[in-house]
Image: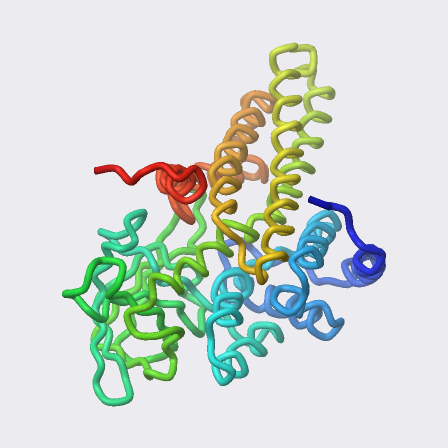
Length: 377
C-alpha cells in the first residue's frame, strides 16, 4: 500500500504551514482550563478562522489523507486543539455527513464548520458504558416528536453544548442491538438538566444529563428508527479511527521534550530509562504508520474508518499511559506539581483505556471482526 503523498497533497501541506505561521502569533491567550464558557468562545473563534481561510472543510469534504495532513500540521505548529468542537467535528459531524439526509446535512454541518454550534455526546449511561447496547434511556413516538426519558453520564461538553448526539431505546422488546435510535437533541429543550462532573484533574468537561419527557422532533433522527446501533458504529469508527490522530503527533513531540529533560536533569544516565524512551519512540512511530494505513484503507472504502481503528485505539491508550508513567520517572518529585502540563496529562491518560470503548471492548472487536474468532458463549 502506498503511504506517500501526492504532489497536490504536499502543496496543501506547504500552504497550510504558511498560513499557520502567519495566524498563530495573532491569537489571544488561551482561557483558563476550568472556564468552559470562555473556552467555548475561544474554540469557536479558532474554528471560524479555519472556516474563513478555507480549511474547515477538511474534516468531511476532503480525502482522508488530506485530513491526516491537516491534523498533523496543526498539531506540529501548536495550533489550538478542537476543544469544545470535539464531538461536532470528529463524531457527530462525520456521522451526519455519512448517514444524514440532505436536509440534515444542510442544517447541521455548516454551523459546526463555521464555529457556531457545539455538540455533546449522549451515549454512556450509569448502567451502560462499555456495554453500550444495555442503554435504558427510552424514547417513544408521539406525533411528529420522540418523547425521551432517562439519563446519560460522561456527556462530553454538555454544559456548553447546543446539540447532543443521543442514543435512545425505541423498541424495548427488540434484541438489544436492534431497538436503538440515534437522535440529534437540542440542548435547550424543556426537561433537560445538566449536572457537571469534576474529573481527577479538576476539570469539568463531562456532565450528567437528566431527561424528563424531552420532546425531540422525529426529523432529528439520523438513520431509520431502531437502526441506531449501525449508525453508532459509524460514529465510533470515527472516534476510534481518526479522532486521536493529533494526539499521536503531540505524544511524539512530548517524548522528545521528555528526552531533553532527562538529559538536563541527569536521568539520561540510566540505561533502563533510555531503553524505555527508545521503545516508546518506536511505539509512536508504529502508531503513526498504523494511522496512515487506516486512513489509506478508509480512503479506498468510502471514507469511513474500519475495524482497524480498534487496533489503533487499543495500543494508543496503553502507549499514552506508558509515556506519562515514564515522564513521572524522569521528573521525580516535580511530577506531583499540578502546574506542570505533564502532570495533568498523566492524570488524563488514566482514562484512555476506558474512554471511547474500554481496552476489553477493543480486544473483543479485534478478535471477532479482524481475526474472525468466535464470540464467547
